[in-house]
Image 1 (cartoon, rainbow, N blue to C red):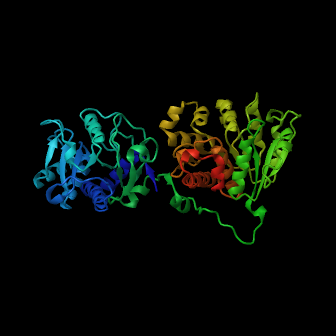
Image 2 (cartoon, rainbow, N blue to C red):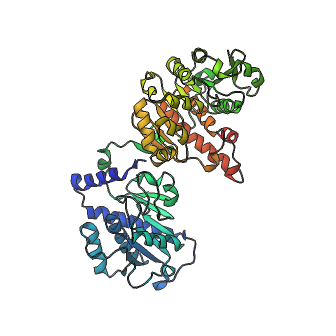
Image 3 (cartoon, helix red, strand yellow):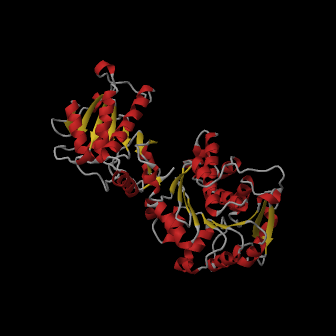
Length: 522
């Protein structure tokens, strides 16, 4: 499923209307009817779970909040169709609609001729929310920006305070359709009916919480109107993995195969104080299907860690007796990587003077696809602008930063990264020819070709130490099994989140989740 920005949606609408010739009123009619049908379906199923206010003939009663513009026009059409289905409705205009023009003005006139009850907010005293069963939010659409102004702000606050279920038309009023940032105030919807295509802000946090349950409904826009934009931002779910990336999880295994068929991953990770990072990463690579895993550590640590993971080979690299990566030349890691199908570097390695130069040597000399995580990302960030001068790798490179690491890589604040997760990940991936998995709620995978995928799996319980080490191991294993960088990152992120969901479901609370549970659920 595609994800679109507000401007992309406007361009699609314009093409459908001006390029193909579909009347805008037809699209508006379809949009309003779809919103109404969603409400009717849920009313019939008793989805709202509350005592009903008896209207005429015991019908449920819904108030439709109407703003100027096309979003308001959609709301008026919705009210008409609700009335036709036996639901008692009232239009509550945010402002007097006398000066409206265009399609919204046409809908206003139709509603008046049909005799639909209407009022203007603030005229004639306060509005009695207790007399209604539900609210349709058709105040501000995707074209709005910034915090809602009066009288919209007060109307939004009152609607939220009413305790009534709210169905938002396309996006909740006050939510940024592109970034998912929420203004003060912002509608807190029970359900959002996204029209034609899913807007990015409905999937990204904190917007996803304000949107409630999101359903996408068609409004008659032809596929040709969408194709002409050549969009490349997608919801990362099972359908996208299969249809866009050609991956079915779990990966297929043929009968006549052996351990060498499924790749050999080198994990360069862990240190005296953080050996668990290497252990988790190596376990995850094995659970994700890698036929062989070698866990490389400074030589002094090899014996104490021997047997911790009997399924993996542990290899001590020369360290001058220090037990630290600072004393282990990058060339030793590169040499050990020969013949391997993937390398994961960084989890639990620690930092030391000159480590950016160490990483550059590994970057240039390791012949296998590489995954950089944790400390390796901070080494990369310390390289600063000079990273642009590093040679492009001929084999794939996947970077798996959390927002803090992404901020350091980009020279931004965490707030700036979180405000534009898709754009930040995409720009860095394209600039440096790498694949980015920007972790967090709704992990974003961005490829060097400009494609981006926003993940749908995972839960807050995965915000626990070691979870990222598990993800790095999973991606490394998928690279070793022959997936390209974007495929491996996307499938790894989705699988990692799904495993976290399974692990959380098995516990009393997701807060009890630890990284090892995610490995066991792979």
